[in-house]
Figure 1 (cartoon, rainbow, N blue to C red):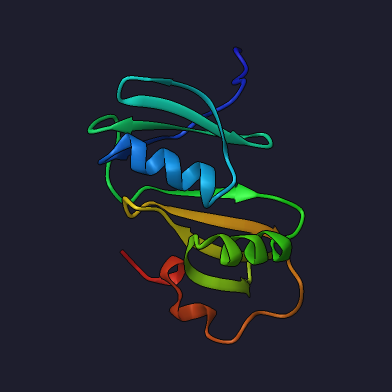
Figure 2: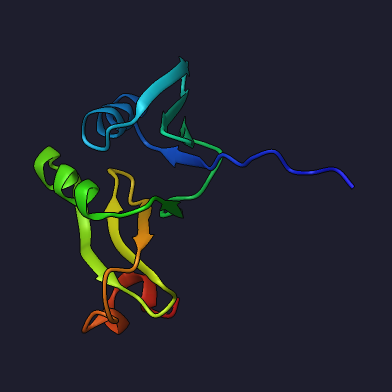
Amino acid sequence: MPEFEGVIPILRVNNLAVSLDYYLNKLGFHKNWEWPYFASVSRGKASIFLCQGGQGMPGTWMSIFMDEVGPLYKEYKKSGAIIVEPPMNFPWGHCEFLVGDPDGHRLRMSGKRTGPDSEGYQHTERSRAT
């Protein structure tokens, strides 16, 4: 049976230049390459494709995993990233915070749990029924 070798989400964006600026200068990604209306960014082992006007739906969610989220949260607060929700501990064993981008996509930054379940976790965006 063939093995999968990886997956890269494709995010539909309204303006590639604006999105690239945000991912590079606010979220700390690096540009791998860019074509007209399409680009690849990465940070560590995580890669994302950005496509202007196509290949995806607004408001896509993804989880990005790391050891701990505290240092990244501090970095993003300083950079001016769109922080939707601060770090919280969840029953599924992760400490997460939620970041938005200019097109309404959500990045769940997930790390090791740092304590008991955070008060109010049931009222976060990720806990709401759709």
